[in-house]
Image (cartoon, rainbow over all chains, first blue to last red; front, side, top):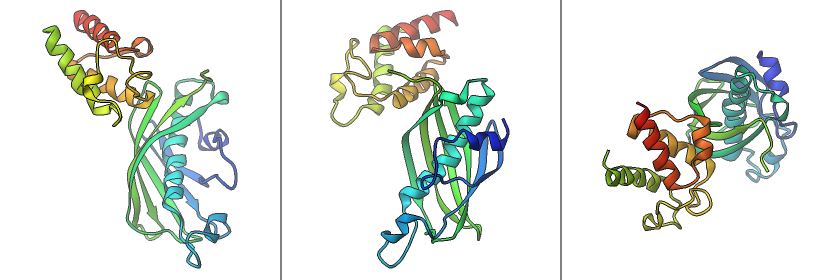
Length: 149
Length: 84
């Protein structure tokens, strides 16, 4: 599956899509990027008069690139029909080192820890354009290609 | 392996993933992982991976689907150890 096709399967859209593109993907990991436009709505309230990207949004960006894009690729490699793809984040543990301000571009890279019994666990890192480590941690999610009742 | 030892080993693994509102004494062979021990399906995967390491066995998707209770897990461990 190529990088364009992975993006086409992402179950998000604006204003909650936090992936602009992928640089690399293989069975072991993925690397992608996103630019936090200053127009994003949450900057109006986080923080008052000092727009800063919320940590939960950084986690979401890490998850969309590091977990979901990789998950779609891995499911595609297993010849699953991706049309009814579903994902739920099951856990995340992150530490944050430097803030991300409006209009900053970040690069997320993730390495697979394991993908078994529908669960994908990844180690993720986010760097800013200066190459500084923004945040790092582990994120897990359950991936399904059919609906469970 | 001694059945008591096997049960103790399994119980020690399960205990790691128990939510705070379930005590380790609440684990019995009949306990249903999801419905009674309140373990979510994502943590159940981690239990299976720990069981694989602890008993040096490998489980398949069908085993995972069948593993509803602590006793189910003990039975699967027996079969897998026997098949080695």
